[in-house]
Length: 81
Image (tube, rainbow, N blue to C red; front, side, top):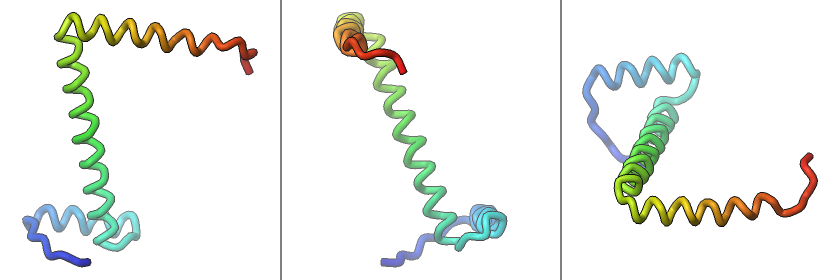
């Protein structure tokens, strides 16, 4: 379902320039831009969560112990390829 979204003229011009350069429809350029921004927001949130985890000494120690336990799974006896 198509929706109308107002953006400032400079953003529209930049989006149109990208769409022309990539030879894709304007709507596809916008969709790709939104997806990239969505991923950026996600990565920033994960980074913030890990930073908060590292600030909590008990939680970070527990995390490191759990990682060490999972590292043992890497030594499963299989020959290296």
